[in-house]
Length: 165
Image 1: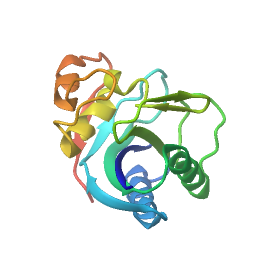
Image 2 (image 1 turned 135 degrees about the vertical axis):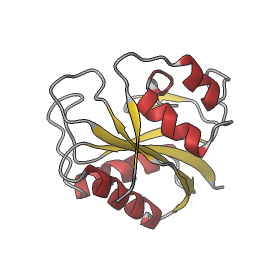
Image 3 (image 1 turned 90 degrees about the horizontal axis):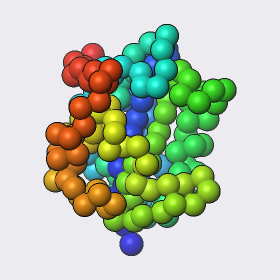
Image 4 (image 1 turned 90 degrees about the vertical axis):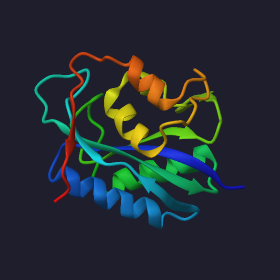
């Protein structure tokens, strides 16, 4: 049975906007997935680190027949295909794909936590999430995305709308 999954997309290396657009095209081509909707893109301040370029971030919703584990495997393979190399936590990256929500599932196992454990604290996730699904209810907190965004006053988390090229 197909479910809706929400994927956070980000990049701050090379041409970040083009990297995000390429990843979205690849997501739509992934077996068992179909792109439903896409947020706007935002220029966002790096969180948890200093000395990095700002990111371009967005969110997409996919209709997927993949299990959360199988979808995560596909996301990691797509990151690798696009040249992501994991060298340090929160390091700069050509592409970052985060499985934020998968249906109404709550999963906490080695290598996979759904919903994403910090999404409610991150404006760079919540602002584009509200573009796509403002009334979606967080499966753990029981609050709508728009209400989580209203409560998220993250200092040092500037999120600026980006005009597409």
